[in-house]
Image (cartoon, rainbow, N blue to C red; front, top):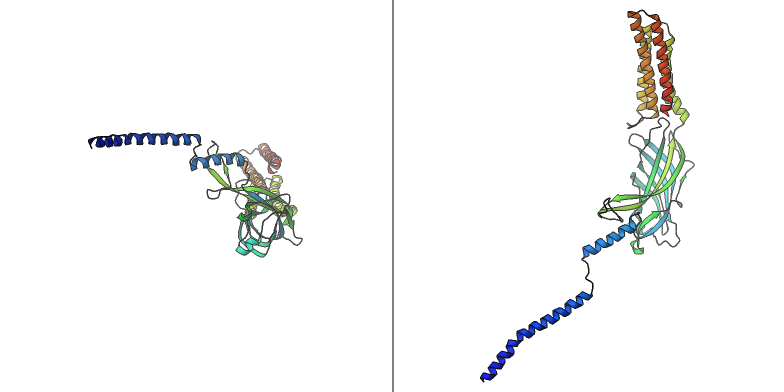
Length: 371
């Protein structure tokens, strides 16, 4: 009986050792198995690696996904009021869009069912659509709205205003893995109706351009842009943008007669005082009247031009006219002073002659300065 108890104690005393050996063997086995298989990177590191690969592929601005290439045509019907103060203009035109590839799976009828416009105008406001027509491979609409663009007045009053219509696409067809659309510049066009008119202006040659418009956003990045130091973190959304530009201008002859010729005429009247008899008070009063007339006329002309940060052609002509006026008033005043104090007719004639020389120099230097 005692021997049996002793054997049981010995048997149970070996169990912990056997269990430890078993655990050790299993641990070595699993460690060997995991050592032979690669350990997966955490999700954040794997995404970072994918992002670095995407940067190398997309740093040139290529789109992501399968594109659908569209041809766009803007058919101008008319241009309404042009507000040069705010750079706005009213436009009325037809918009035609169609895929240029025969096997393009785009279906514009999707937007007919969803009551959603597949195209929008980034520089437009209060845009109204009418006579819209949807087909699987064709879309058209008549568009009336107010558009905005930067206007250049450096050549005023002979300025040419570029009035543009910018079109971007909302069209996405996830069903066909089409995530964006690209406008094709070679296939796109612009047309002007023969009855199209612009009150007070004439429509001149126009152009079509397609460029990539990049929106910086963190919500829907289309591709990634590396920062200057190579770090990742700047994302952007890009859209293909179709730009139809119409150039309008006024008659240069009419603008010269209405704005430039009166300034030249009023300024020339001041030169007459240099050949008048030595009545200095009359000369000063006459030139002062011409100066006031010129100031009022220039104020009227400049009311049609918004404030600019540069000199226009009219501004340069105005500076030359004011300089001539200043000499025309200052010269008889100096002559009056010399006649009253020194009674020196020789010096008075020299002042009169040198004043004419100064005016001639200003005009000669000013002509290249204007243009």
